[in-house]
Length: 99
Image 1 (cartoon, helix red, strand yellow):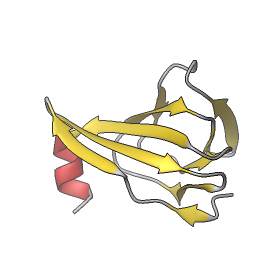
Image 2 (cartoon, one colour; image 1 turned 120 degrees about the vertical axis):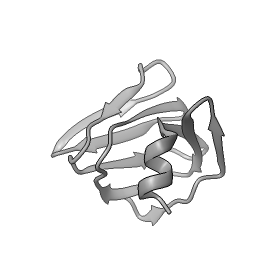
Image 3 (cartoon, helix red, strand yellow; image 1 turned 90 degrees about the vertical axis):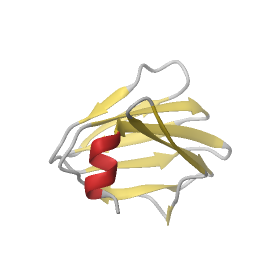
């Protein structure tokens, strides 16, 4: 369970995508939530626990990107200090839903 909800360390719009980069320590991440759009997520340093509708996946830099589905509750938690994970979604959804 996420103890500290993070805001992105870096955010950018690129080629029609909204990219948010998170730097997290153990227990930090994104609390249980859902969206009306899919988005991809990847752990690029350290390790993360992805929980979606009660199913868990432990990911690290060797894990392929994860597709988090629209309308399903999910959570992302860093399992160790100095973890970095990235979320990517279509820019049109970022503009519409994340204002």
